[in-house]
Image (cartoon, rainbow, N blue to C red; front, top):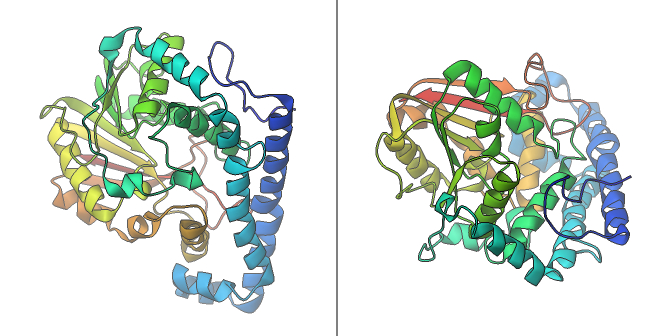
Length: 374
């Protein structure tokens, strides 16, 4: 059985042979054990030493520090870090395999870029911030911005992760559900998707809503070229533009009635987050909506966030701690927004009731949905 490391029907992409597919399938199997059986054993050991009220009274940092004494938690932590490295850099890792196909993959993207070039606006003079260039995003060596094959590696890695977690998927259901929710609530016509990556969050705003204009924005030129190619394959008219979330310098004041961002805030430092909030406010029309889906306030309190904070160091997420520490209501209001709301969003089903406690089956839950009005 494939772990969906191959391109979907109608999509161009890297060639993944049976050896690499079997390798990644093995990694997924081990990761499922890590995220379920091993995770549940860690919960059991933590609860054996303290009452639920004591757990709730603890901070996530205290719980994580105390959990280091458990051999099971040490193994859980080690396995998380190592499996991510194996996914990218093992004998049949994503980067290992795709680096061999670098010329062919670059040719694919260049060919796509020559079609409808007015929809792809790259900036060769852009200077990415150092927090972006110096971090190995998700342990992806060198980040996702320096080589064309990085974009395909990002796409494949996301698809592999989608096989592990019950609240994610590799086919983009989560992102379609978010776009549908925005359509039902806000009926946007002009949409800006910031941090669009390889297009998974931008494409649904064209396929699942009545929006007349959709623009995807990202710092990574390779990711934007792949986004453009995927939009062309899906026959979706979307513009992609290289720009930073902090500045959104290529966009006019009051240009959009919805600005969307998925899983970007936990990848940027607080200073950049505050600049992004102000830029998003600037490019929104009066009454426009700002929508953020990210790992912020999750059901389960301190115990849930303990696992997220542990991932900060194990999975190259240097800014997740600072994001969780932000008072997003106060930050949004300080940036000029009003009617700020934070709710839980089951990204896989878009309608499940809010859990009353920690996810007992897997340590990943749905998104926190943060919405505000200009």
